[in-house]
Length: 288
Image (cartoon, rainbow, N blue to C red; front, side):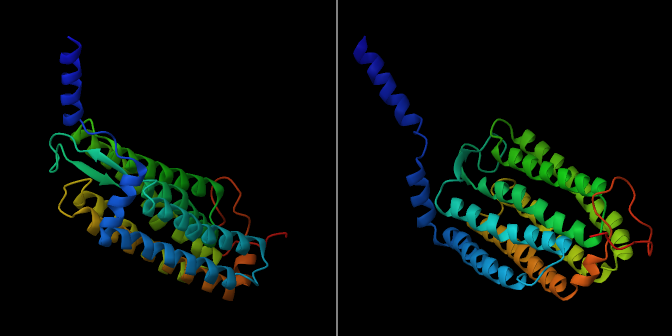
């Protein structure tokens, strides 16, 4: 009897592989040169960006301009930590895809650490943009809340293995929150930027942000998490290239403008008011 149970357990162990250890995941990442390079390229660029942005903001004195600078600096700081987590295998898992998926029954590498990065870094991008536009607290809270919800529901889509349909349902919920973000960026904040005399740089950064952020749901849909048209390494490089433009290029353009136009930022009224912002041309200098 005991021998029979032992034999059955041995057979079950062969059919159901043990969960991969972090070391095994790390070695798997190391073995995929293209995938591994997509992580280390961003670690290197984030490090360079941190040093550059510290230098660029060294003479910023106005409190509002300093807050824009700090929020922007947080983006590469979060990224270097997050990409290190990916490169080390700490924030990567192998998940078995559900029935209906193109890779159903296969264990697919899932880079859930990227969603952690986006949840922490994209609100900083929006905070910096909102401060640049001279928006009010209501709009700032709305867009940042929708952005965090977008990232968290995107993570839920990537991590759901019980149902292929529910994965896509999470995806469409995430896209719905994205629409809220787009509305504030494209409709509400341009009017605030006009009133704050920052419309020219805001519109440039707005276009850059919207165009690049559209790339993330597209790569999700085409990648191994969605339709599996693109493999994991190509998808990872797609995300990495988008991060380079949406984070480091964005931050460089913003900080260069702020450093050269600090007086314009200093004249903006306080962001921390509820409801509608000032009408165009009606802004008054802050008391501080």
